[in-house]
Image 1 (cartoon, each protein chain N blue to C red):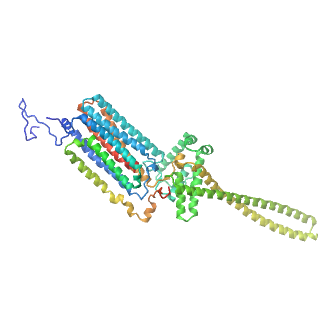
Image 2: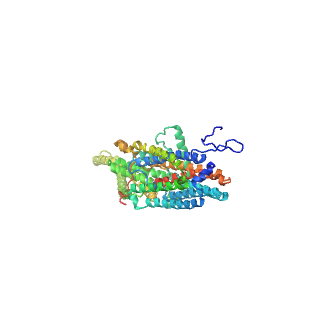
Amino acid sequence: MLTAHEADCETTGTGSTNHRVIFVWVFLLLIALTGLSFWIANSHLMEHRVLAWAAMIAVSIAKAMLVVMFFMHLWWERAWKYVLTIPTLIMAILLVTLLVPDVALRTETYSRERQMDAAEAFISRAADGQ
Amino acid sequence: MTVPHSPIADPPNSTGHLVLTYEPAVPVSRGKLAVWLFLSTEIMFFTGLIGTYIVLRFGVPAGSWPAPATVGVVEWIGAVNTFVLICSSVTIVFAMEAAKSELPHRAKQWLLATFLLGSLFLGVKAYEYQSKFQHGIYPRSPRSLLYDRADLNYLAGLKAELDRLQGGNETSPPVKESANNVVANDVSLADNHRVASLGLPVALLAAAPTSIVESSTHADTLALIQTGLVQWTQQKVGRTDDPQMQKMALSSLAHQIYPLHENKSIETYLANERLESTAELEKSKIEFKQAEQALVDLQHQLEQLNTKLQSLQSTIAASGSTDPESANNLAETKQLQQELVDKTTASGIAAAQVTKLKDSIKPLTSRLEAMDKFGSLPAGVNLGLHLKLPMVIPSGNTWASTYFLLTGFHAIHVIGGLVAFLILLPKQLGANRAGLLENIGLYWHFVDIVWIFLFPLIYLF
């Protein structure tokens, strides 16, 4: 007979020393990935902004997955993890997507008059001859 | 509970009673399930916040989102904070592992390290907020003085704020509510007091060239900004119909108050304007001198005429009307009188010319003085002189709102985690508390994940 906590220990594994090695590796990977996104932001990739942004978000997702899988033990958890995480993610993504037509695309339908009062563009350094 | 909840009956124990076991629906402890359910709502909450930030950010008018440097965001400070949070994530899992292995003392050390790292994160955050406030970027509106574009609206706002700071003539636009008015007055008093108590020169010594410190007080500086920057721009805009020229004048004003970044076209424009103004001033000075000389000459001639007329009149009076010359003298008197009237008119016109030239010299000298004083401040008037005048940061208000909302909510979560650590720290952290440590750890890792997304979005994009 197992108590709930013991059941926990079983699912998360009791080989603590094993885990510690994994944790150190995850830690090092996280540091390296932070360095990677910092490097991307200061590299020539920023000339293709969308590409750089996509790369940085991909790095962030990778970091988040590392933390969720190992620090939060989801890697070792049983199937119940999907019951919680998948509906949550669907709701979260829907929430944001619903904002796109009204908020993200609002300037597309601005009238000329409205545009006159909207925030002006920064004078870009390229146009400035630098 | 007399009804067995499992169809497979447990074997009766020695007393003959049934022993029931609890079998959870999910194979985790209730505490852990609760934390995961809570984290599900948190995931939706932060995805909502971060997603809204992304949607707002990429939905602003094209090219108008401020670059990190424009709003005083320093990349490496964000990277350091990321590192700090990642370290704290590792220390909390080590704390849990130590507790599991019945090493309560070591668990406590790891937990303390986590607490200190979390506090360090908050300290860095506080420093960053402080630097935003120094830039004049606030999360709430009454003191937020950010304008979306350099236009006449901005010029009027700047002028009104300077009038208010100079503490006099109520030309500022009527404030909607009296409560607002009181707040505004308090703020201005506080600002004045602050400047007075700091002793402006002391505050300036580090940032500004010593010439400013020596030669002007706070009031003089404000007056010079009003005349040499604001009124000058107003006149410049009024004098031309070319929208491009007007835009350039307004943009250069905004640049002098708070430069967004190095801007060659504005620097060139200002340098040219300075040359033109200097030349114009020289010309005006020469014209002024000439006009003054002309006036002096005219006055001199007037005096001579007067004496001549007087002597003539006395001759006429002495010689009497029978004198054959008196007719001639009378004619000459009339002619002199006519000349006197002409010259008086001419000197009046010359005096008006002198005044006019004097008036045209005044804005030129204050413009050049302002350029001398404020041109040497690479960070602009606001940062260089510790002022909080209205400034132009396109989409700056949207930036400030989203920045403070996102990082603020994250910081509140960090504080929540620190409170949990504080409650747990004095306790004995053996294997019986490993589950509790794990649950708090889950929450803490989530806080770390949120920052993992905030770091590139706020600091690097």
